Amino acid sequence: MVSSVLRDARRIVVKVGSSLVTNEGRGLDETAIGEWSRQLAALVRGDGGVPREVVMVSSGAIAEGMKRLGWTTRPNEVHELQAAAAVGQMGLAQMYETKLREQGMGSAQVLLTHADLADRERYLNARSTLLTLLRLGVVPVINENDTVVNDEIKFGDNDTLGALVANLVEADALIILTDQKGLYTADPRRDASAQFVHEAKAGDPALEAMAGGAGSSIGKGGMITKILAAKRAAGSGASTVIAWGRESDVLVRLVQGEALGTLLVAQTQKKQARKQWMADHLQLRGSVVVDAGAAAKVRDEGKSLLPIGMTAVEGDFSRGDVIAVRDASGTEIARGLANYAAAEARMLCRKPSTEFEKLLGYVAEPEMVHRDNMVLAAS
Ligand SMILES: Nc1ncnc2c1ncn2[C@@H]1O[C@H](COP(=O)(O)OP(=O)(O)O)[C@@H](O)[C@H]1O
Ligand SMILES: N[C@@H](CCC(=O)OP(=O)(O)O)C(=O)O
Image (cartoon, rainbow, N blue to C red; front, side, top):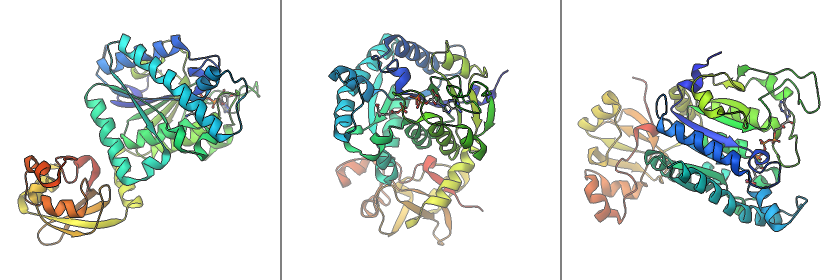
C-alpha cells in the first residue's frame, strides 16, 4: 500500500524515544543512531526523490546519564533526574554529531522547554534558528532542556515536544519512532488479541481509549502521549506516523510512500490550520500602517512586509506579538507576528534593512512581518 502523505512531505520532524535510543537503558545504541543518521542524510540529500528538511527530536539523556553515573534504578528526586539528563545529554549530542558527520551531515544541538514555545518572543527566536539551520542543510537534534524544568521531567514526555516542534517549524509530517510497530487497539504487551491500526484520523477520541501508558521502565509517555502528540501536530496541519524504529530503512521507506506503522492523518490543511491558529490564539497588540506599494505587495503578491513600506506604528507591542497591517485608509489587510517591538518599529519606518544595524544596534530580520507568520484578511 502506498501513502502520499509522507511521500509529499517536504519538512519532517522525526522523534525517537528513550527505550530505542538507549537500548532499553543498556546504553546509547550506536548502531541504531548510525542507522537513523544514514537515513536522515539520505532524506536531506533527496536520494531517489526530492530533498527534505528534517528535524530530529531525540530522548535518551536521562537513561544514558543514569548508566554513566552507575545508577541502576531511576531516582525519584527531580534534581537527580536533572543531573542525569545533563550527564547523558553530552553523550547523546556527541553520538548524533559523530554519526551524522560520518554521513557528511552537519548537526546542531537545540535544547527547548514547553515554556520556551509558549512565550511568543522565544517561539519566534527558536523558529528563526531552526529554519536557518534547515536552510543551511544542518540537522537540528532537539531534546528537552531538562535542567530548567520540573513538571516535564517527572513525566518525561518528548512526544509532546515533537508535536510542538512540528507546529513551530510548520512541518508536513511528524514521525514518531518507538518500540512497537505502531498503534494497536490495546497495549500489545498486555493484550495478545490487540489489533493493529493502519490508519485513522488524528484527534479521533476513540484512539485515546486504545492507548495505554509506557510499556518499559525506560519509556515514560507510552502510547497515549503519542496519540495526543498526533492531535497537537494536526493542529498545524501535520500528519503523524507512529512506526517501529528498528524496521529496516523505516524513514526512507516511509518517504517513498510505503505504508509502514500507523498513519494518523491531519484533517486540516496547513494553511487553513495556521489561519485558525492566528484567529484562535492571538490577541491583537497593535498595528502598522503601510503605503500603497507595501499594501499591494502584501495583499496581492503574498509578500512579507518590509519596514521601508511602513508609515506609522500604533500601540505598544513586543517582538512576537500579533499586529495588524493596515492600509492608509485604516483597513486591515493582514495580521501576523511582529519581528520588532513597537518602539523599534517606529524607528524603522521607511528605512531599508541596510540601516537597521545603525538604528537599532542589531538586525533581527529584514522583514517586519514575515509572510510565513502572516494571514491575509478576507477581502
Ligand atoms: N494501544 C497501544 N498500542 C501500542 N503500544 C501501546 C499501546 N498502549 C500502550 N502501549 C505501550 O507504549 C509503549 C511505547 O511507549 P514508550 O515506552 O513511552 O516508548 P518511547 O520511549 O518510544 O516513547 C509500547 O512499548 C507499548 O507497550
Ligand atoms: N528529555 C528526557 C526525557 C524524555 C523521555 O523520557 O521521553 P520518551 O522516552 O520519548 O517518552 C531525556 O532525554 O531523557
